[in-house]
Image (tube, rainbow, N blue to C red):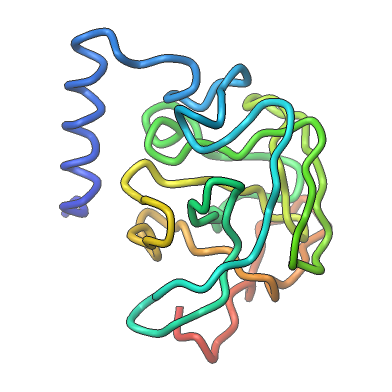
Length: 170
């Protein structure tokens, strides 16, 4: 069974595409601008913010626009497995020169099909098109999970395991 929010988001995306409103930014392309899709091809700031996740207030990572950042569990430190329609719903955070504010983890740039994709502790980062600043709606959807400052680092190209703290119940 498909997640109702994704079905609605997919219908909305199809409607926008039908009227010609999809741009490289909405599709997560490397020329994306922060004003249209919540990420930037040139500069991005990853910072911390409080948000409600699964009914609990948590400190999470957000982009410069305040949108929650997610990681995709099947990704590796070197490769994104988010493509096609999934990438349209979960735009990658891209930046040639990301900066961190309030997060002590390691930021890196992985050159992949999305361009200069930002990684935190080895986890490639994404936003969710149904989110707004301060709103987390994608937690656990399609194997995406909210990125937190304490996200366990991955350094190999194998799929991450145990990256979500058990105390949070994710």
